[in-house]
Length: 447
Length: 143
Ligand code: HEM
Ligand code: HEM
Ligand SMILES: [Fe+2]
Image 1 (cartoon, each protein chain N blue to C red):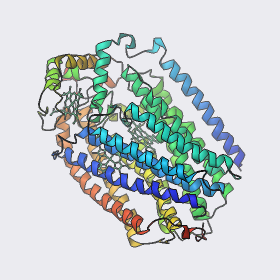
Image 2 (cartoon, each protein chain N blue to C red; image 1 turned 30 degrees about the vertical axis):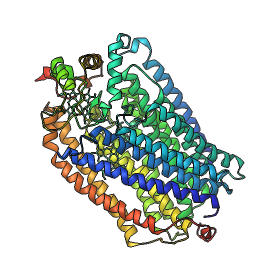
Image 3 (spheres, rainbow over the protein chains, first blue to last red; image 1 turned 135 degrees about the horizontal axis):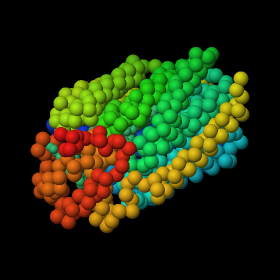
């Protein structure tokens, strides 16, 4: 680490890890409910578990992104953060709002809109929190002598992500309009501005890990985020095929969303090529694993599995089935969970001064979590395809079909256990690093 | 070869262009003649029904218009499939509704609340879904 203020990143990462564990717990509650073991139904019904599971996911990823920004922005712009104290205020308020929302979900306090369940009153607090975060990041960048493309793309991603939260707060009487604008948040986040954040972090990591010239890496970064928006904005139409709006979206959404995998393919080729090209081999092998892994798995989960159900002819049958859950898991894992884990793996030795660049446990964490998640994806996928055929093609009753496919959720639970062991290993390593400290300043000559 | 400046122009230009088209298409979709959802027929019971739907996060178990969770039956065409009497029984049940073993939350709605939710489903039921309405969870009339 080069600047003292980068230390605040550690606490965002720690919050991230804590929320990830909780997310997994609620995933298991749902998994067990699906095989008939719903003993917790009275206290934590499925809809509570689901809202908690998905919201924790979003919050731990955001906390990871924020930590990444607090680490990257000072280093890229060669100056301290404008205020460390306010960054801690922001951290604590983020944790408080998140925890309040999660507790509220157990008492029927929510909005009941998928992924945007946070009640209105808390929405305002989220907005204030994010404004504080952006203020700190943008002011640091503004006052800096150096503004790199990497830091600008990252900051733009964070700024647009905040702006796009607003359409999700508009109230509508029509379910159709509600759904339409919900996608302005959900789709334009994961298939738009979050890719900017991912691209920014990826490019930072590649510059550090491969030693390839910044100019080359940043040029390709522009091409990739260019592809993202070119396809992703109009690609929003793939959610508008069958929700009760004009069928112009079937054509527009069909064509542009089919192009979306290109951005993820670009990301994968970019990472692999830069790795091949790089002369300097950074000793942090674990960070390299996660970085390249992220670029590849995101292409599979978002690119390939997204493409698998994005054509209107396919989506007509798969819309709103477990096929979507299959894609949702691997896409979120590959693109956003793995980029956060890559960033943490890179930053921890620099923050704490303990140079654990290679460890058996670290490798096991990588492989077990990835194999486990791949297995979960297959389990969801098999269940989803069976559901599509039985229910949508052969017109079997919904609950009868669920009964037929419940065996795949046993597989899901086994793979989820493997995945969880991997995550536990990762977190044990995280704990072993210890706290960030000032002795770590400048000692990292490999930066 | 492509220069960094050209790459940036590609990014900014592409984004602006698609964004403008996106806004234009959105405005077009919500212009009066394109309405496929009978938006003008929305009345108080339907809106109250929608509010109950949201307040209780029914979408955390069910899908509607193909959106939500995959744990409990898709409800877009539930009126066609089950009829109003059955739905009322589900909604007003004081114990968890679970004829097939998987439990719903026991809401024990009042008669008026159940009527509002039914009005909401009745409105959803008539939306033109570009063909999805014929595919979505088994329809009584297909049986
Ligand atoms: C990292 C990027 C991505 C993530 C995290 C992601 C995640 C998700 C999630 C969570 C959903 C369910 C959303 C909901 O119902 O509220 C979804 C739906 C969908 N995604 Fe993605 N996705 C990504 C990229 C893509 C790409 C590149 C494509 C297309 C090529 C795609 C195609 C789709 C489609 C068609 C649906 C709708 C499924 C349905 O009709 O039920 N996704 N995605
Ligand atoms: C390890 C244990 C996990 C288990 C057992 C699990 C299980 C589940 C289940 C049963 C659902 C609900 C599907 C339905 O509506 O019926 C779900 C939803 C979801 N989970 Fe997980 N999950 C786990 C971990 C994760 C992780 C690590 C991620 C992200 C990287 C994730 C992302 C999601 C998303 C995005 C959804 C919403 C999907 C959609 O609406 O299409 N889950 N999960
Ligand atoms: Fe999408």
